[in-house]
Length: 171
Image (cartoon, rainbow, N blue to C red; front, side):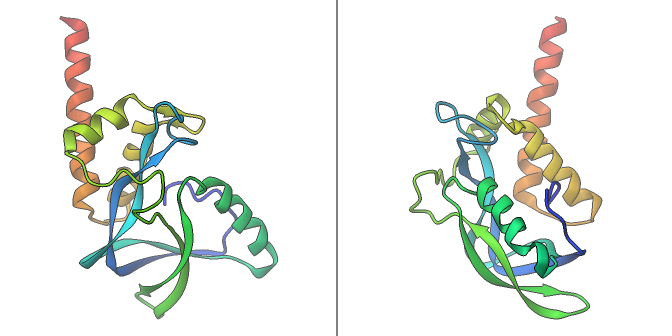
């Protein structure tokens, strides 16, 4: 959401029903390492849930190039799926997204906020610190007026932990 890293024509707010966004997927290749994988979001099936985000319109001339970029970025346990997204002006549209099934080898599943924050706080990979991923995602959601209690709860716990560490450094 906050770093698409591909060429697009239009970015439009959208909602998908039946899924929630959760920090339940390991990242051994971007926000962590194989020895210390970070945590990144995936969609999880949730009959009563929904996820707000964006759909991106991509020109057909660059579609193969965009897919190659996304396939490289979303390789550790993610698979492409087609979903229906609701866009305010257009109604329901078909969209491609990446989804991590719970049976993939990098799926971490639910954990306490403290456990997730501990992992996010300390993991760093080739794409940078895992904490930056969480903070940038939360900032983007807030910038566009989108609510995600799971992300905001993790962000608040991470910031509290970071502030506590900074205070401890000065004592």
